[in-house]
Image (spheres, rainbow, N blue to C red):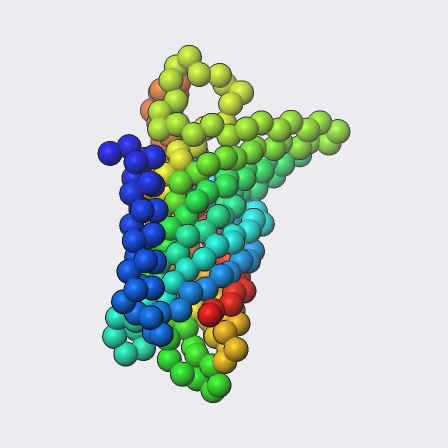
Length: 225
């Protein structure tokens, strides 16, 4: 199954979950909308095996989720987000910024228990995301260059050297903690660790040791109803 078919299957699965929850858990299942800021970077190695030394890039996320009870105080929480992740690096007076926009499907198990007038939240689980567009920008003094990121699993020998390539498919793990107030407003601190190398195999480089993985954290503000 290619990555586009996988993404479609996951979105369909999420839609069925929403429908099932609405029909069978009426009065117990809650829906939420959320948005916030991402602080993300790329960890890994360059083509020669040296450790990447990148800075955080500020992005954002926005989307929806559903909280489905599975046991007292425990819930299954699938969601669907539009998210912007990337990385920044400054070297030899040149600043390189990579920004990738993705559709993301988090699938979390959540502990939600009463605390004060609201609820304490703690959750973890996997995520799968698929890149739909991206940009790379290079700034150095008075010079500036920007190009679209291309999504490929393999870079061929004849591909342009001036293009920037990443894999579209990413997956990893989520961990978050937060608090939901009695009125439904909630705040979360999120952390993510990417587990897939999103750097494509580059056939132009012999003995390419590149490994690039998304890592970072974020803050989310939302409303549950």
